[in-house]
Length: 346
Ligand SMILES: [Zn+2]
Image 1 (cartoon, helix red, strand yellow):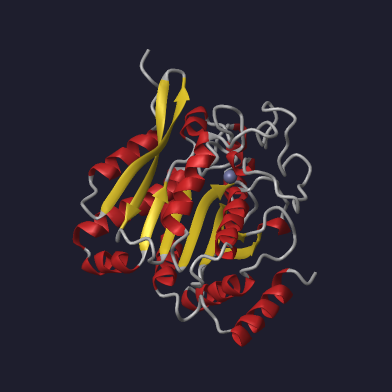
Image 2: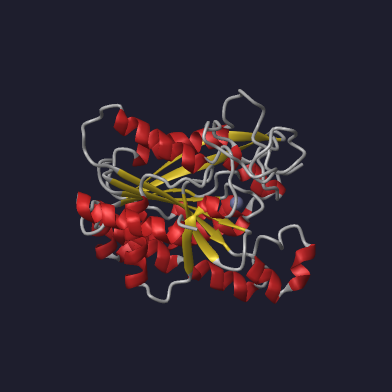
């Protein structure tokens, strides 16, 4: 029997075939599925120096949300083509690197499930934090892999895919003075949201000032942008969120003494509002993928181009952090107060 085709992986291979010397590609892990071993790739574009500012794009954590991986692949495609002729882009990647994990959960993508092949929701798979207060079920559960939002059995190691993603992010981002990660999902609400930590608690997270400064920069630079920026926990709280976990790991490493250099790590989740696609095309609610993906070709194309300005903005913001990402203490205090007022006062 021939192996079932995984379109996103084929597309990724096509893109990788066109890569020149500016890129490094590695297989972070392989995941078994019915005798096949499906790869999870990591791609690094630009300088080899990990102490430079770095932007990470991640897709395909939830297999059902195929549009997430497709949006990330669309940006990777454009960058690979730009690298062939655009000297401005070549130079800017020498200042700020871009790294990708475009398809974290290949088995889930193949099976059209949110979870991986073992029934584990990878975005609930980090070790739970004592501060965590999860919403019932959707916040992560350890009752059964047959129910959604399964975190994995208690006291077991992380799944291969989550572990590989975390290892890659720690290695490629944690030495950077500024690192931004954006993990692309779909399925919640009518709007495109940009979520920042925490997911586990409604308490404010330590980089409020930097997030608020980034939002101001986004509002000023792209005044007609479509995003609502907010803490993830404003919608629901979850156990085992990988970005909460990575942000904690980053903070621990700084607390461990390190070299005293300022380092900022801002993990964002782009949650594309799929209810809009449903409202415009209610019949797709009856298909497995329809709740999470644009089904009409013109809407798919619109979605694939819609986020390119955001990614380009984030790369520029990453490459030029001095004006916004490291505010002096009095400014930082003002930004924190304004952010608190905006997101936590009610
Ligand atoms: Zn998702």
